[in-house]
Length: 482
Image (cartoon, rainbow, N blue to C red; front, side):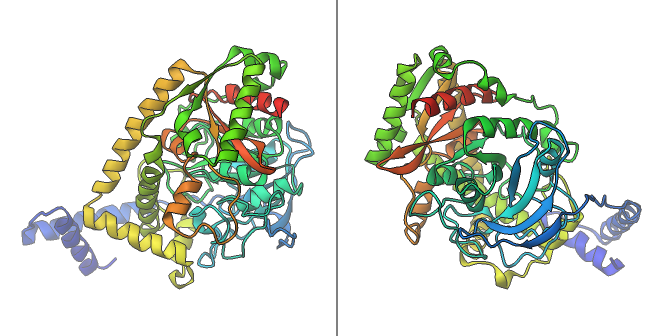
């Protein structure tokens, strides 16, 4: 930076805070900034490196589930040895282009995300990356720059944004896949494709190497054909990572604790709250499927009672407001999340800064412009209001979970919509109506497939923070009764 550039930067900074500077102050602060810049210039950004995947080729499956196929073998032994897995296109795999579902991104990471390292260390073989809605900002796969994903389990959309991961599991192309979940993006494709999706407790799975959508809402979690497999995979992902400060000091839940014993007998130990607002907001066939599943838990000995969650219906809009502010800020700051971020990759920052905005899809382009405009126009007042509503609802959920071991509701209020059906914001908000509340609260949420009128849909089990084991036990009981 030249001396004139530093002086201009000092003047701009002062104007931001409404500070009037004298000529002497302006020059003094510019000199201080120059000295600090010189000191920081001696620091070399860490260049994270991993052994790259081999045989990287474009995906060519009939469902368009895979963006790339690759060969990345895991350890010879481990809890996941013999499993083929895939990860969403916003999770870094060294040597495999990562696009976040967008034509605007040109990035090939030289490092693995923390969750990829853990899958490989546990013995899983990584066989590809999966298609997704652009920047994870939709729920149907139709905004993916690489084409929509077909649903192997139903006639409608596969759900999103982890569309390819859900489809790959449903089609039997992999034993498990990782998705990411900001407002339901693991659980929605699980519901529409008829597989299991597990959103863990917030901050228990590290997000280094993952491209955040909204850092206070984002989770990484598995999709799998059954609850046991999902629990086994999640157990290997959990735990702190030095590159993700948000995970430091966080307890590590063991979801496999819910696999012990006979599932039918274990259900007798639990009190379950059937969420009234979700039942009332769901399509009739979906509500009936959840009622049947709840009856199955009761038949297995669980205590099932209706409970109300005041404010439940407002949470999709709250989630949307938080997401809009955090995403637009991340993009404006070239992917940098100040404070307790999720790991800092200079290579990814450069890729975001160098994005070709002209290649952004219509959905993301509009959300960037409108979201940023609202933040600027209101000075962030909408974000503050949304966060306050979030905290009030979190208290409601905590209160119910002090009385009940789990909350029970449909994962989505409908079965899979048709392609072209989710076009308005109201349509989009309905797809996240039952999932987004628990991104706001951070509670673990497990989606287990059942049928509604012959179509797949999910039953969602929500438990207290760090109590994934109870969700697994009740999820297995739902499976046993299906």
